[in-house]
Length: 402
Image (cartoon, rainbow, N blue to C red; front, side):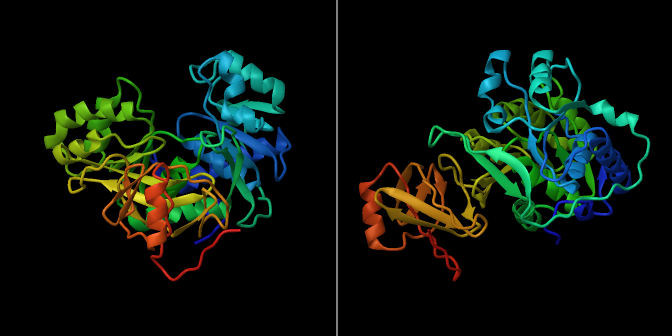
């Protein structure tokens, strides 16, 4: 498997809203030509993706920018004009190129577009590519797996400071490997309804879908369109997987799943991203043809574990699951320092509240289902009950801290 994100990793049989890979590649060529001829982009330039709908242009911009060696960010609009300065992207840097769907739309009001026109070199609307008729191949930049692919950031909730995080091509590909191994195959029909700034949606859903799934669809699931999604896509087209980026979206879907549950031929998988799993998901999984899954990790340190809530999952508060990737944490002077295979060797604070139940460790309600490695660590955990410090010994691989 390639460790560079180009069109070559897209499955030849992949279809997106009925369009073939070849048709997507022609659109990628046009976006590359637009970016190079109109904007003069070069490797290392930054691009902000503000096409909210995960449509063909959304995908084409991602792959065009990637092949040109650009560093990209997923952008959502601020709540109001007054909150512009507080958005993550403003805090981590304005992109050289900004691509939006339409000026003056709900997602991109004039005040936001004006802000980017002042600070970015170019602001392109989605229909700018319509001016490009030449869809022949445009040469790509020389790329290596460690080249930066995405700029995101930490939340700032731990330190009070937002930090830039650069994810490489290899990082994102590594992120995609787990869901491909555990969840996705050619028959896993998917709905891609949202892309998110922290990379989880792209790395754990959108990219794996393009790599192995045959039938991919897109469309925003807005208030009032939930029943249409259930009837037309889940029941009508056999969609098996969809992302929920907030608990309210799940609550809006549940009545329609309940109403039409007798027509389901399969269980709907809902990928949770960006929020803690509410306790009522356990009840829904037992009552309805639905189950929930989520990746646990951070944009800074990669995908650590994978969780499923289905009709057999015991209800414990918060996240439930099994540790997938190795994680080593050392307790030094009251602070936990950790590393994992995916992240390299970082020193990071782990400020999660802990509970000790028997010989198992719960981190924010998430069961890691492994024994505490030694009595001294158990004593520390008992004494420092605000935090969890865990050392995993599930394999022979060696880990440590700086």
